[in-house]
Image 1: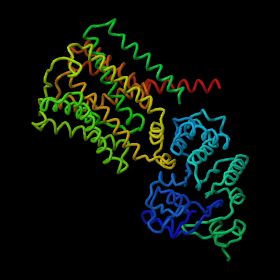
Image 2: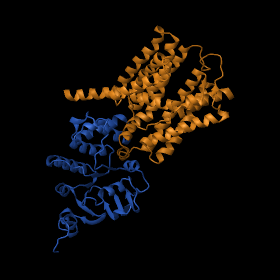
Image 3: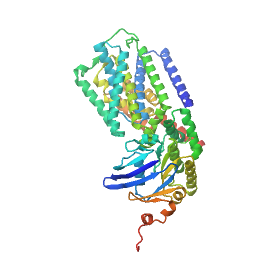
Image 4: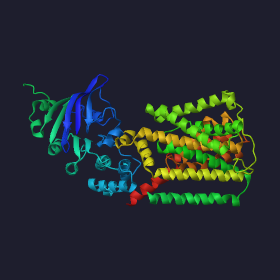
Length: 238
Length: 326
């Protein structure tokens, strides 16, 4: 479904992403992890069209994404969320979701009903009349998912949507992601919460200094020496 | 959507009925001319509001579109004898094209905020210089609009009352357009891109196309006011129609009333124009420039008391009261 092939990005001398290659199949839930500054969000920005790769190619449903703008990529069915939540502050929560739905479905009534479905699905019914700037962190994070869902995505890129949530709320989001996946949405998830990422990922991709150092099952990742080194540093007497 | 539209149309209907009946009670020429001024500025500010208020792109060069409207219909009438109603349409199309050009230059490089304000301000100045210095366009002394037999067809009337009603109709039309925009996909997309362009793109909104459309519409509508102004005063000059102060006045009115709201700019015009008329008539002969100082003081007080504009401030206090009760 998504094919990232030898993608590199250099920011004024800093190699943010270097020759990263991977594929995601339809229906998968893939975790993308790595220490801070490993290039995870840059990779998301590259895939979603916010920045252009220096090298390599990105294909989604056999379509080349490199020449496309973010809104075009979104319309192909690939939507991303932002690590720093970006609600429209002066619009109500339901209007925030309605915007994406209106741009997906041309009928107003259809967009309204989609919006209401999503509000129920993510469990935001109680906050739907509140304004973007009045939402707390949990509501903002859920809204970020809800906004992405309003575009009716086939592949969803989620950037640290569990950061700042307590264990109960994390569990709610995990349950939500499982449900979305069962409903047929493919997920690529950046997450620092290891327990969460382990429990939802079919497969893990690990980045360090912009390089892919591991790809495979979550269980094996914990035993992989390169991954351990990246997270814990090399053992002194190795 | 229909509920909110209905509410707005009811407010609009009340305003229209009151203003339409007003001349039956007060018919003094001076009062009518103040109202004509209010309608003109309310209309201009409402046009500006589509781009500046809803999309959040602060244009300081709307005189460009106003002036194109005024000059196009006037020059076509003067040289070719073209009916001003048709000239008005030609002017609006030209202004729209100019809007697209300014938009193309700015949005291609993702200009926004203060940089967009600067490029539009520069265009305003450029136009003033061009029109001041080219004799074909009337030069510094401007253009006298040839007098014709007063009738609706010639867009020239014998009484102020007719201009009053034409101005009122224009204001009503733009208010209807604004209500329709606010509750449309286009309106939501503008609000979204004003809030956060990256997030709007991520939701599948073609932000560049939306900004172009907003600029086109805003410029196109602004030009109509140019023709109205020219036909009403029968004289235009670069000094008046391309005046930077006029650009700023249009923006100020929207800011005071409430940018990005349906009735904000109109409310702003109904407050500020009489204030400026009053200070001028009360203080204008006392000391040079004193009325401008007073007007400035009143503006400062407005901005201190209601920094986000009247309508948004009212909305905000209603919102916080509602959440306290909840």
